[in-house]
Image (tube, rainbow, N blue to C red; front, side, top):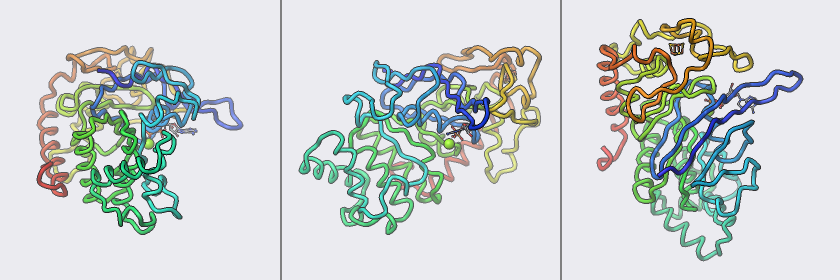
Length: 347
Ligand SMILES: Nc1ncnc2c1ncn2[C@@H]1O[C@H](COP(=O)(O)OP(=O)(O)O)[C@@H](O)[C@H]1O
Ligand code: SF4
Ligand SMILES: [Mg+2]
């Protein structure tokens, strides 16, 4: 069942002292099902954070709609209807940002409950439940943020997000600032929280090996547009968009067989979001480009059920031969790297 529907989302930021606009999002559409992990991936500047901020209500979109649990959401920050409060939560990249340096982390963790009007004893009971879920002793939660490691602090940030029992948590690069062990612990925590609470995640990351480990469906973005959306296994093993092929093969893993296949190397200039050309945004870098690509944005096509691609030449990538071997190697390697740091039950 659909929980969140993002429809033709456009966000153009004004530039001070200029009539130009930063075209951060140019018609982004996707849906998130109840209880699933939906990941947004793409190079820096592709618009992932802007989508996350719009979903959480931190910015107002230029146009488009976000429908949550069947109801369109208001853009106005803090004016979201009271019944939505606490149902969408977020975790950002820098764990320190969620915490006041002068307050114990436990104080920040219960803060979202105050907005729900919960009384003190109910808040304390909920805090104890969440600390157990995130495996954090109360004594640790009573420390100041500066006394916790970044991994512990991010663990507390996850606790703070789930304390309202939300339907959706938006996680923007939640593991990027962490070392590999802390990263694996957070991934493990997110998986176990989801099993218990059936929370859906909008997981934003450029770290494909982490994404691959916990995602159900994946959406590949480039310069504010969706290139490809589909089940994670399909998009990782059998990508049908030249950008996805280039992106996944460029993942830096220490293995010679993981080099980008020559024919799918993305070379050439990345257009400025201030001056996007018409048509497919990848045209300046795409080895399969042809004149029609530059005329209009390719319409969505479905090479396989539930697998959407915006590329007029997606059929040329059908069940990529050499590429699939490389992805299988990539799979095995990324699994092995991630599992090193994970406790037995997840591995
Ligand atoms: N507040 C802002 N004002 C102007 N431009 C912005 C703002 N926020 C983001 N952008 C621009 O929007 C584009 C998308 O950014 P972002 O959503 O942060 O991408 P990502 O998270 O994928 O790296 C970038 O070109 C970025 O510079
Ligand atoms: S539409 Fe054209 S330029 Fe865009 S990805 Fe497909 S082949 Fe490349
Ligand atoms: Mg970002």
